[in-house]
Image 1 (cartoon, rainbow, N blue to C red):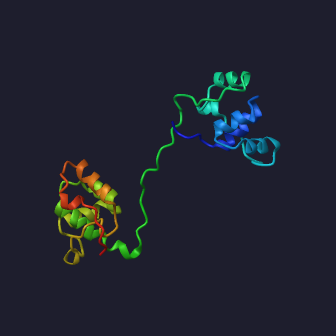
Image 2: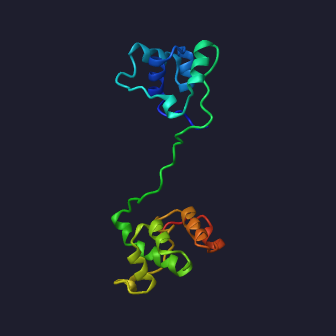
Image 3: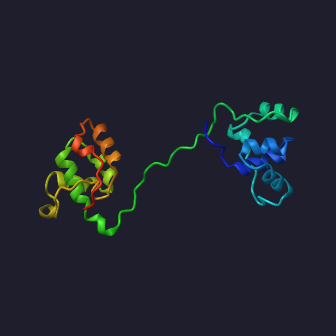
Length: 186
């Protein structure tokens, strides 16, 4: 079960809209009972807008009614949340200016050692354009004479896990020398 979304705002809503005890609200929201009491007194959380846990799917009205009638019961989260927090997808990451010149070397390494990896996978992995990748594949890049194939993990352009995942996804096999954790810096 995931943790409660916006616990203080949920506590504000429960204080304003139910007859639940401070202890019940504190236990459900994972707050201290004194903190819930301070929210109710207006000492803490001024300006916090209440967050409806029923509308959000974290609680049911039946559960609230049952716990309002019997203060010894604890609120139980709804079995299926309508909102499940998702992990952030990996977007483009910042590459320092000094490292941007290493991208063609990393692309050359992937193209040389794993030609089955598609251009869009390399583009996401290294953070470059498909046009640049295609020019390195066809050896028509403007600086091709100075490009040397270097492992992208050693260049700190991607993680070993991400590289392995891209290789497997493209149908290639991971060489044991490639998948070892690389600890040396170049």
